[in-house]
Length: 588
Image (tube, helix red, strand yellow):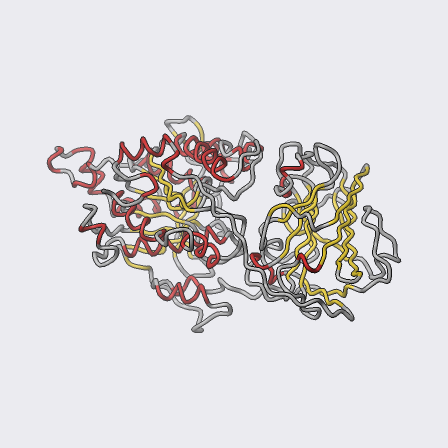
């Protein structure tokens, strides 16, 4: 099995399933294990949160299929309804079905035809795994995400489960949650006391997979063919790391797996991936590995030394890591953010005129310089730079942002205003009391300086109540070489009473420089981590001499609409073919 180029990682992966694979290819049908004959069976099961989460591991999944004869399958907890759309205006369930079609095309191109969806709702980008869990398993949803994943492991009987990194390294809360839930399902599927009705009423049997691997996108390992033959350790967790080299040549496809992975990625057009260069031009000997942290061997968590303390700061994740027997994952996983900037917002005697033009009378304080936060750095100040000015009049906050930008991005339709990260835009984020754990209790306003219809547009995104912002007054003045944006935000629009000494905010600029609805460079006043999604990383903006009006905290309104596998012909047909019900619900 495999080829002479098969590295240590693949021998280790196959070691636990070599017998089953050899039986599949050589033994009479009557002698084969029943799980191998089951049309639902896969040898390797990837569990992610959204369509496209597996694409950076397709070089590995494809090689395991082609070189080692292993069948791979993919499970996706949501259909990504909360993401953007670079190809149209579909939203909600319609966008979810579009993203399912893209994912099936992408993974099908490397021979994967088992794609299961759990039909959980996707909402906006958040760093919070607890918030994600509350949306996936809180009302009106059934609290059954883990139950469905355990059912899927028992139905597909994989020997290897691959999932996302569960650590809170400035990454999507849904990615963290997928990694956590996959880890728990890996450990529970072989326990007959876990969800026993799956065994007594649905006809499944307890199944313990052998290995658990987690994607490690942050690992900076060696490049070239030797990367998969090295014995490596994750410096943060002290756990072993294995690599699968992307430069391996695919006999079936006649190209490197790096190129095959790129071809598949470009199928996710709604996410802007069609804008990726069609050809991987990195020299073959410099191509990296797909990296995986080994979390479990022989069905048991891999031991590793802990950091020497019981509870790191912000220890919610550390508690989870101990419960599942992987305390080493919490090493350096929940760090305090670096120091943040501070400013003061001064009151003015006359309200600024919201016209996109600012003067010192309207904004007497020194401007705030925005600095590089994400993406390619600005070539120079003419390429991208920005300054923000803030003031207050009565119970209204005012902001003026002047942006230097040598190339305007795509003019989106005004009804597409909330997808501001796809083009040139300004975002203003406010946490009234400065104590929010995630953005669901904050106010975040995005302004596009120009639209396809002409003029600016504004919308709230990824906050306490995303959508239109009729309470906000806004204006923009586009010009050659840049634009300016000005807004008036009533204090009453914020989701809680303002604490004048603790209010935090961030001002961000998105610079596209493209015509394909993809972002490029991002600037921020407070540029730490996920500056748009982590209120802990926002700067303090003290409101001098201000007594805000009283009000109660408004409860978050989070969209929970999701596509259903019952509405997907391909999911229904797969259910008939494999016997796994669409949505991985109970088998009757």
